Image 1 (cartoon, helix red, strand yellow):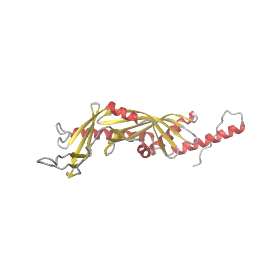
Image 2 (spheres, rainbow, N blue to C red):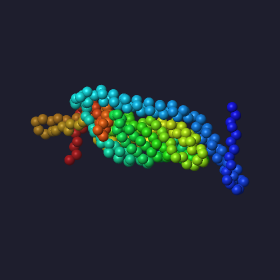
Image 3 (tube, rainbow, N blue to C red):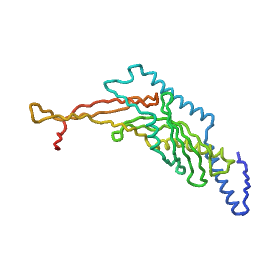
Image 4 (cartoon, rainbow, N blue to C red):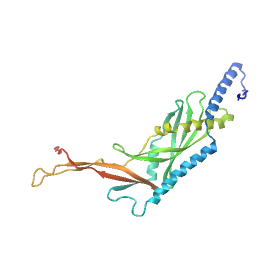
Length: 270
């Protein structure tokens, strides 16, 4: 089916400048319209986002339901660490601003973050802007909604978590004629949504300042005296068995598994 003919009139006195400007804006229109063609139905997309958020919250509530009184943790092998929401908010703010390049031509810059607890989920709202680096240099406000997910233990940095993005919102576009605002919004949202894996991997991990020793060491004593015991060491493997968010705190249950002890060299430094 042939495309409809588009005619534009711009108030420029100079004939060459007007023609060049019309061609530039026509290219811009083709760019955003072509990108927006890949956009799914907005209502269907919103239902998918709501479904994913509800599934995350249902999973969080089931974790709480599965924890019987007195059985939140194995007292012999597990330990619980509580982190206040104010500390998590400060740690999130310390990772910003951050810029992530996507699709080789766009940059998402995030400058604000807000943390809330809901249905045993640590929800995160990020805000900033997205812009195109080449012509047409359109830009807009971007808001991302997601949650803290995938808690891991790093041997060097301790307890870490990453942000999983559920939803993208675009608002207040600039760099294009106002009549094109709805098209630009849909185009930029489509681009950011299709780049979520790339964007998520570019966000910095959130490191919670908890020291986790990786070994248990028995210093030993002697060799003078009637009894002498060589120093020994056993590996201590730590893992995050479950994470619970309630009462404005993030409760992280850490499971410890102690390996076999082995003799180590005695420290002879005075």
